[in-house]
Length: 134
Image (cartoon, rainbow, N blue to C red; front, side, top):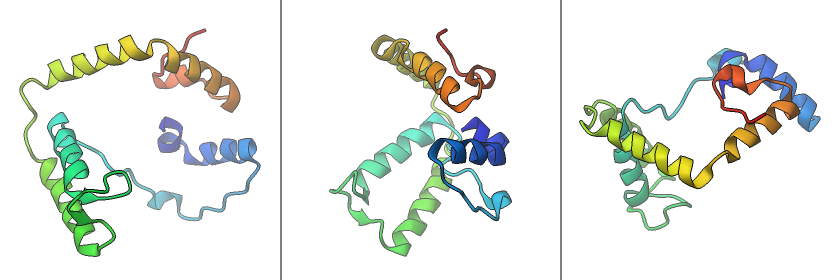
């Protein structure tokens, strides 16, 4: 993701080499970040809405079908509203609990995967803050 954000042309060049496909993207500057959440509170609100309010392939029992323009518009407005809600006072504890749970269940899996990915794509992911097992 960091390479996509920082040097998209380099990312495309490396991707083209790996999958042997020629991309023709004319408007690189028009690409933007989506789904950016400002607070942990907004993430939890969006998780609730995605699970119970919107009907998608991953939540087939939702109330509103996302195939309709009105529902997609509503979703965008609710995301903007959720991003304005102040942070939960106990957010730092939740983040710490999630990190501990991930460390206990996953261990070095991603660090090992990052090291292998670095070898395959020729980019040192450690320079972007990823942990790598050597």
